[in-house]
Image 1 (spheres, rainbow, N blue to C red):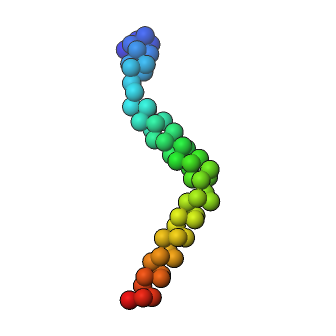
Image 2: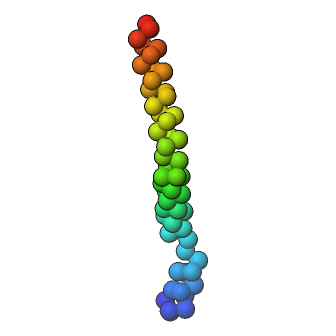
Length: 58
């Protein structure tokens, strides 16, 4: 196998692209969580308050 064949195979190999895409998706999700942290916290607190109030009424 010559260096030219190796480079052509290397250029055509896209197996590492899935890893890069997953890392980018995770980075975007972490960014969104950081940006909307207060909103997410408020929604989760509201949900837990409703759960607690409804279980107390049973």
